[in-house]
Length: 524
Image 1: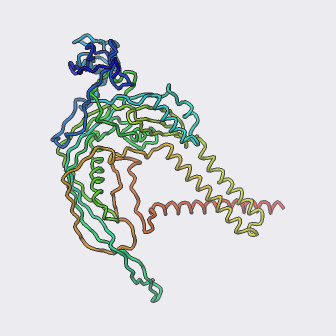
Image 2: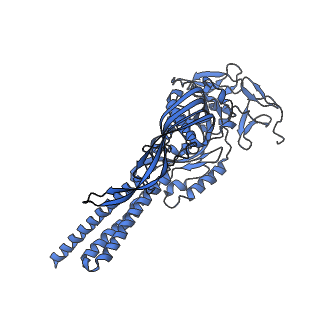
Image 3: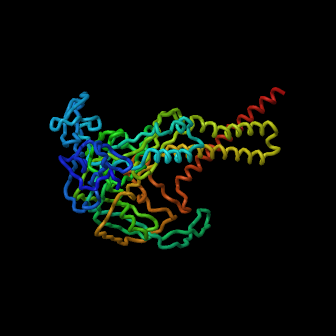
């Protein structure tokens, strides 16, 4: 610890952390140390942690932190928290200069928080702006080929902003009971089947499948499940505000959180929480269901044809709600993308862990140009082939047209995929993996039901072990069933679609070729 860093025991008076060296309350956040630096004696002191893991298994009933109360809708009054004595001072929102009526400390804009939205805790910035800039530049370099030039050229230390975003942090102590069915492959056999042609028959392979009724009972403890608490970040996968980018940089190291102290906001901006706990319950409930299924799936590896959970019952013994501010470095830019849609694109860096995600806009007309080149070549070559005696080089012409059409479809597919990769609209926080979870008293029951015959290797109908309902919107897509070859059935839909597109292009090219040929014949 440096000369300016105190090793004395921290003194806390009236809920405000004072300098352990001189007792002053005036201090600023020091990003180099992650602590507060006294304005008078320059001593650096650290805030104590308030959210270390543990103790959730003892939770009973519902507990809310002071910052988790419902937000008041009074637009005329705001609450200022005095950093000197800890008093909450309610004043008119238009008041320019206010002093605490207890200790006369001059209150600053950093202490101004809408009623009910003052969080219980926060995580100070750890990653410096220069480090965030390096990460963002590297992220852009990997996507430089098709990215809009205006978006990348404006990235600098000046345009990166540090912001505290609001979150709800939930501890849950529950018991879980799941029931469903599972299928296990037993073997294969050959059966003689009538083909329908006279008395002809053929041998076909069928699959013997053992069916089981499954039950899982266990105690589930979830420590610090984290949910966005602002409405514009709550709905993931939006093509307008690319909110999935913010979701994807989670998780935060919530166990390092310190008690709310407005002095950590100095030099940074913040967003207020605008969602109450009641508005977050459904999201929490669905994510807990997902976590429960994920835990249960770890006990079902023997069921190679899949498991379907038909009923999930979660009995919550205790839940604790806290609200928090977590730090993010943001670079944002509103741009018009492909299709003329205007969206705000972000690159966001978790200012604690360095996790990065972004939505990078494509160049406005690049998809049209790249896909249009092979399409135009297809039309021109087909016209040329019909004008120069198509039948003379029939198979060569067909092969060339097929290659050009394939190139058109392939480039269209690539650009569509690139658009999704650049926007990262389907990215999300893997809460079922990254949240601190523990289980006890796991009871597993696999009751054999019967053995049946299946025609193919497909997974059990409606199997749901990979669905994540709490991910929301575009991140809620169901995994299609797999067929006997292991290829997802959705692939066949794509293949048929591409064949139809190819035939359509051939038909257009052929009609244009015949039309041009007829005109030339008439002219001659």
